[in-house]
Length: 226
Picture 1 (cartoon, rainbow, N blue to C red):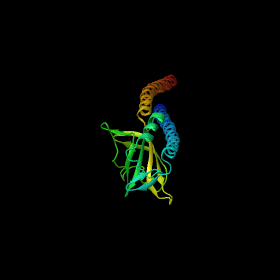
Picture 2 (cartoon, one colour):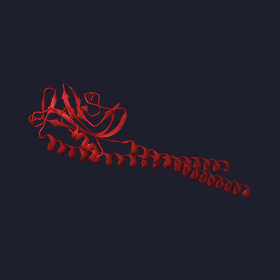
Picture 3 (cartoon, rainbow, N blue to C red):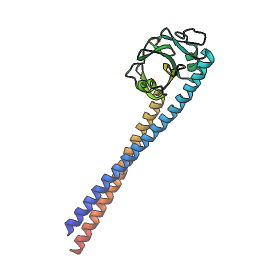
């Protein structure tokens, strides 16, 4: 009878200790997910607002865009290729990188951009049919989400440019680097990881001590009754 009670307490203690550790780890995981969810929502709101502002910049500077000779034309019939006033204004005023694409066959080519590659504007480079935004924009819908551009992570918005027949003829892009917010989240995770480990260890030691004391108490009582 004495051994059964001690075994029961030991098993109960191990179960309680395991449950304590699992609950602690789940709490840490949920906290990290919540922070990332808030970060992504803030970035999504930011780029969605700024892609709408960029459309206003385009309308104000170039009027209604049309396709012609493998490029996009302003309302005066002049090509936008190499004209970087709008994209530079977006970067200066809003802090976001900006690009204007023209649709070329089944892809999109950069004809105006604030993005630099080895000291030169990334004009003439393509979005790529394997890009995360490709299927969405090809269907004529706005894409908002993370994307990698020239080996850097951005939170982005890609807005299709359409002609009078509702055909996609190009794209407007704005993107904000995620590096700063990612670093903040990672720093938080590192600090919270250390704090949570210490809390878990403290709880485990405390619970383990209670289990040992309970076991000793039962054993002492059984010996006294014997």
